[in-house]
Length: 134
Image (cartoon, rainbow, N blue to C red; front, top):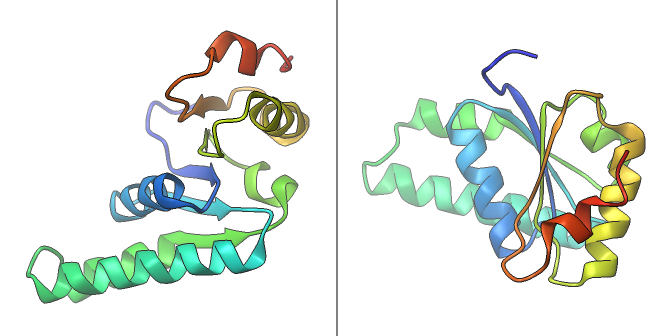
């Protein structure tokens, strides 16, 4: 695997997930924002679009940078498609151990063998979350 990440997925389109996806897209990474809820993932994309628009208005981004970031961002409600060709997956689901373990167990089936799996947990054991992975 290259030392530079060019493809990533973020699991969870809430506040943290869409923020992570936004930063990745602006940084030039092709990123898939995933959520099981189609309305949530669409709201995530629209929030990112609005944040990018505000960045242009404030002079923090050019129109071209905004357009490139939007091109780097896709959304999905299909976990397999979201993670199948990624180098990095960042999980940003609610703080429920069983939910995070379920996501890790499912994504373990579909991610490339050398993908980096991350979690945005603030209080749960990373060892407990990851123990379901091969």
